[in-house]
Length: 338
Image (cartoon, rainbow, N blue to C red):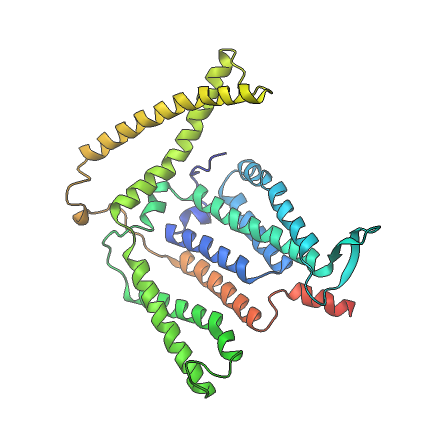
């Protein structure tokens, strides 16, 4: 089912489009850092709560329900094949052959993987459901806006701190770093390197994509919903004419698919020509670099709060990972079993 923008006045709808894009990126990073089922479960429930407030729950549940079996399959692979050294054995899945051992670590990792995938996918759904396609495209497009110095400095410091926390194991695990043996000098060198890397990343991200790419992305996002509706209309028209669109015979099904694809393809080409004429008639190809934009993105209080919470979560995950506590639930259960 296509994911289309749903109008609303919820918290997610009022957030800046860049914030929602960063929430998706931050959720992905958090899912990579944490392997704890409870933490990822809480994150998923929080995102789901925001989604229930923003869009229709039946629509949200319908999209997520289709993914349950896929993510359960990924989780089962973790349960069956994740057997690290010194793992706590529970039982064999095939006891008479002693095949496929199931461990405590495998069960915990399987639950964590389930919620990790769901959290990332749910963040994508919420971003697309609550953000107009034009705003989503403009977030990664250079629009010639004046950037605030305080925002740039905060972005550089935040990125530098994340780079430092993720690179810290390279200092703790090696006696030398860049030829330096003094701990204070090693930390200073790492801090300077992370700061320079953060400045470079900030410069790259601040430029954005050319306006032509932004328009192409915007049209791509907007066309997904239109194409989905048109496909359904063509399918209903074929059914109304007594055409069996889901035959059991494989060869017949290929023929039916061809009969559906041809009108869809022709309608898409016709729409593409209309869109190109509309773009040219508005003078888009004239002096593109000097174009102005009706809307200017501005971070508000809620945006800073959401980004601050997300930054703290990622930083806490990196800190726990450096301390060997990326899965507190697993450590707690293993200590109880010992």
